Image (cartoon, rainbow, N blue to C red):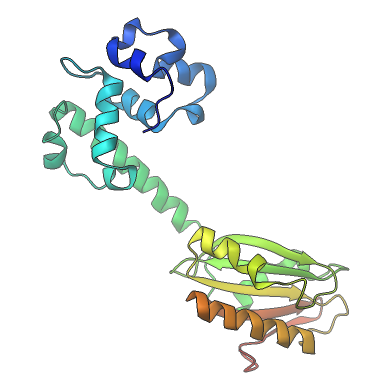
Length: 234
């Protein structure tokens, strides 16, 4: 929880007596829900506090006891043990948690799955006819779903342009389980070049160190594509 200098004011006043810019609902209407702190969002869901503790204090107490990741896993009985949470508040919280979980599951299910080189190429059709070389990385979760696609470099590719740091920084940030890289050959011939093979080996070695699965390196062009894994180059 990260109250501002208004923390002391909030603690000694009832919500209805606070200046409008400090009331969670009014702040949400004026500035947008994305500008509210976690404690303010939770306060809106709770609606009311308890005797001797306004709703922002109650929300702050809950978030100190249960960080956001743990909060979503609380059950009805555990919620009732929190001082200030009755059956009504527990039901509202559980309903809110379930909406979040279902929304995240739906978003997760909408992510494209890649199980073959053709699946990768289908996600990169816009690069097949490019007049410059584009080096692209696909970051996957544990279910082989693409969680992000990044253009790493544009131009004549070599080991200095495609540095492992640039390729794997997003993988670490996204907690990716696996990575697939790909690039196009404007010449029309998808056969891997010597620099392509060198880059692939360098990236494979880096992936092993980071314990990230380096699935494949696809070379595509307007005439077709090649999987370096299928060629035994990984």
